[in-house]
Image (cartoon, rainbow, N blue to C red):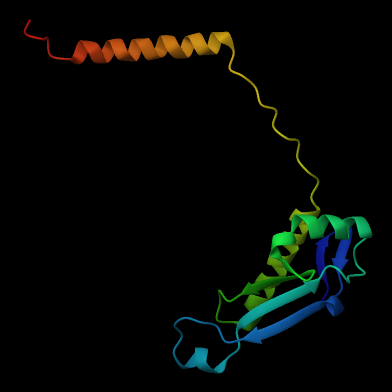
Length: 140
């Protein structure tokens, strides 16, 4: 089954590698007999589904998650292998779409205005005065 990341990008099923193993955690006899944990791998470096620009963008943005140009996601949340397969496909799709998303504009650092600074100090002075009035009068 091909993985549709976006209308413009579909990863063919032949490029996806599946591995199955036993999930950890409780489950009684069921967990000892069924391979429900799913590992889904995709080799970004050798993929024909993406352009060279997209490949470079994915390799730089997902660099920490890659091992030799291969991205791997795991899913073992459910007892059903089919459900875990669907989750693994969704996780991979999300990762790839985030990696290919255009960069957002960087936040420009600004200084507080003189007016906002004076308002802040005036409010601070008012709070201090209120607290001063709450004090017990000194015995002088």
